[in-house]
Length: 258
Image 1 (spheres, rainbow, N blue to C red):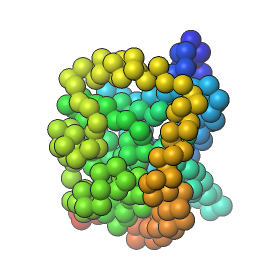
Image 2: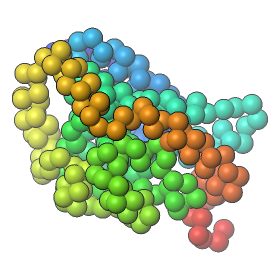
Image 3: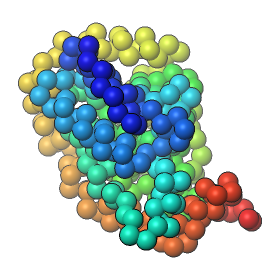
Image 4: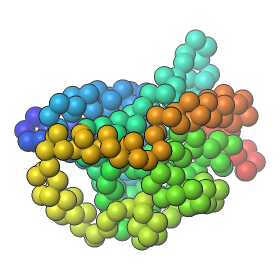
């Protein structure tokens, strides 16, 4: 077994399976530039020999989306720039199309960009604590980069409804919609059962199959420019950035008076 130390994730590789755990407990397992870069680094290392990548979070929080605190700090510092949405979209694209089977093991809350990781995965497993939400519209944003992956997984109308309502759906509903592929009170055992089957697949078979599936579905790479442009538009709007700053500084939601 190989264990690799990173700042934002925990990684271990056992046989041909790579386990990646989001590890930003102090930031509610949110996404920042370092997390994206480190996940991309791991997937690069998985290209040649890894057949399955298992992504997980904490038992209470899988991933809560963008790190608003870091975003707010960066937007207030002249000369500082985010890496931009391209790197995150590319990360999800690699999960969806790369030469390995990707599994999201979901427990607890999943919000906003966290759903991007889930929707980009080949298989999504979870327990009854899993709750899924897209909160972006509450802040004047919309999940531009998430939606191409989410629509592909659950269909246009369900993704549309989830975006507009901004409220969480429980695990059972997520299972009925196809956002969760399988659900079990003991999700660790559920993951192990899936790995017993998946470990029999060869690297060549997985690579060929995923290339084929990407060709017969709407290619996610073709939607990147539209998704990135939408993300840049809403995250450069001064009123949206102000709403984010008010939430970070005082926990005040956009519809509340400060």
